[in-house]
Amino acid sequence: MVRLLFIACSFVLPIQLHANNIYHSNDEYGRSVFSDKPAANRSNKVINIEIKNAYDWHNPKLKLRTSKPFKKKKKSRKKKKAYTFAQLQSKCSKARYRYQNYRGARSNSDWGSYKAKINSYAEKRDYWCSRVLKRK
Image 1 (cartoon, rainbow, N blue to C red):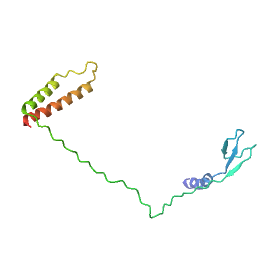
Image 2: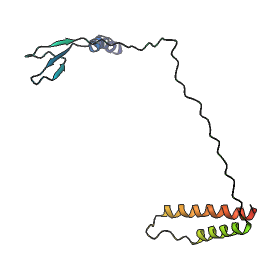
Image 3: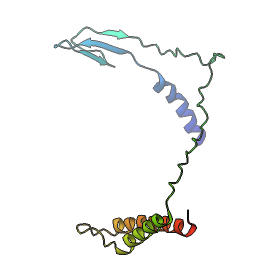
Image 4: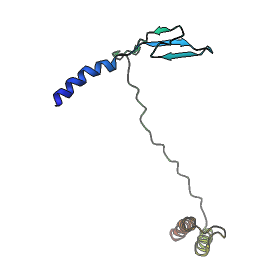
């Protein structure tokens, strides 16, 4: 059964790959019409289409395009501003106060935005209070 199907396909396949003629004609308004069948009451021109590949794949001078390697940019470290111990304490207490007393926006009851704001206040509190403890 498989052999019979293979033989039948081998006869049908070349017929489908064969391109028919393409006919070009103009309609009554002067527009171009392309068709696989000739128009009955108009003059037709048969168009031969030649498919050519102009790109030479076997040219040894052509090189593959390669991208440049990725280079990491060096992060510039900013120097921390030197604060006095009293200034660090005031920044720590201010950050701790904001974290403890944040109630959320009046118009916004979204838990996600509230949690994000609390997390940002917690990070600032941790940063300033750790600098107080280190006295840096």
